Length: 203
Image 1 (tube, rainbow, N blue to C red):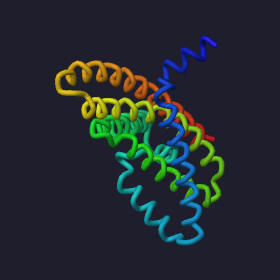
Image 2 (spheres, helix red, strand yellow):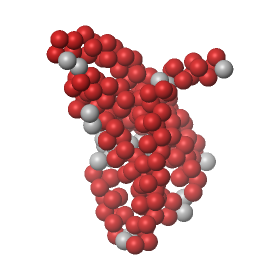
Image 3 (spheres, one colour):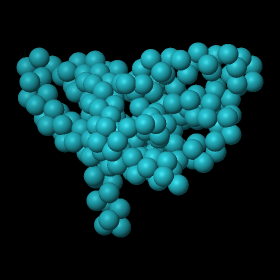
């Protein structure tokens, strides 16, 4: 019971629960849309893959992005750059100041779901299972980062002028703490992803 309470506090579960649930729903929605597109309009999936190739340097695709060539340090740096800097900090947390973190989080996972559907249609079921496992770990980190950013945006808009600075300082302190947890989770998931990729490419 005590361990569960500590875990909930560590993950800020009371605040991030809704974001995480909506993220999972978005992922499932993306998978369904991808499967429908594969049947009704398969050419759209090729266009989607082309789009992903254009943004692959700033947008992470669990496992797939590190199955290619490159040494350990290159892949580790790439994962940290995409997962933590571009997506977590810039693409979600900072956009939360404009109250866009929640929207970006949902769009990210809808598009990821479509990509998962493409891999699923191709028959690589083990890859899909591993992708979903990593995506769920990342979803926790991204959800925490999203709520941290959105909290700053909401405080900035809702606080009255006379107490805005004081409330912003308090919110900023909490949000930075939440962002640190998100970065820790995403760094851990990146190491897991890196380890799995090396196992798959070795055996």
